[in-house]
Image 1 (cartoon, helix red, strand yellow):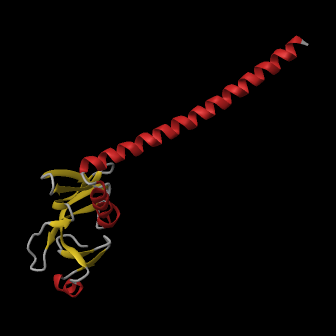
Image 2: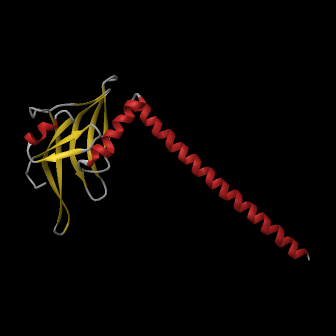
Image 3: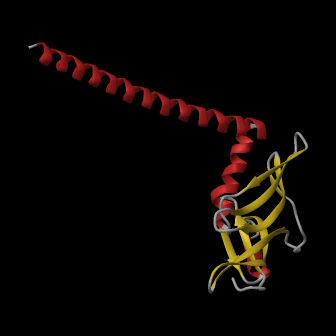
Length: 180
């Protein structure tokens, strides 16, 4: 997309997108669209001599091109921040409302661009709805992290036990050899 040019992207139910130059080009897809993003140039970031990255802002709009909130069952995307970043840290900040608890949570994607919707946001929203709350989702992440840590510690323990057995065997062999 060129700097200062407005484009539109239809976000489909699976998170995939169709990007078009004109809003009207998306209207025939209305039965397949979850929401539409109006995409505008936000800023330019210089990464090196002669190298620049363009960052964009995303605004969810309805079929009248008015700003809209995006619903995902018990959650709503109430704000989509612009792409941000530097060489090491970049992403898009999403403000997510838990409608049951009337709480707003921040989610920062790990990437920029429209693929964030398919690869990060939609899977997150499905997991949030499955977990029942943001807290349950976060606790589930902690459980997985602890399970991985335990698995790594068990593996390390097995390796150390094996090494101890090898050293004990070497020691016995060495003592027998010395006693002869």
